[in-house]
Amino acid sequence: MRILFLIAAIVGVFLIVRILLRSPANKQGPEATGRIKQQGSMVRCAHCGVHVPHLNAYRAGERVYCSRDHALEDARSRDDG
Ligand SMILES: [Zn+2]
Image (cartoon, rainbow, N blue to C red):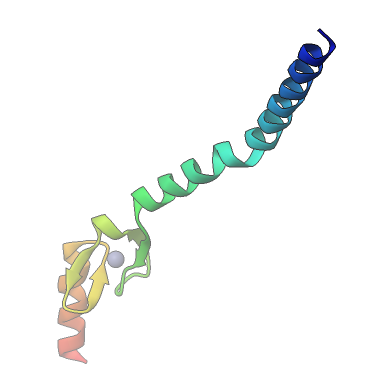
């Protein structure tokens, strides 16, 4: 009977230690970084400098803009100057 009690105690301590080690960091870590990755990186508008999500950005050649208007305005101002 003593050995059974000892084994139960060891298993219990092992489970408690495992739960304590898991809960603080591992629960938040992968979830939080996953959310940031899903949103995508931010890119800077070449015209006004506003940061917009990568997916919402408007592209014209190598340049990136927050909107189509800024892409057109920037193209126009570069033609002038
Ligand atoms: Zn802009």
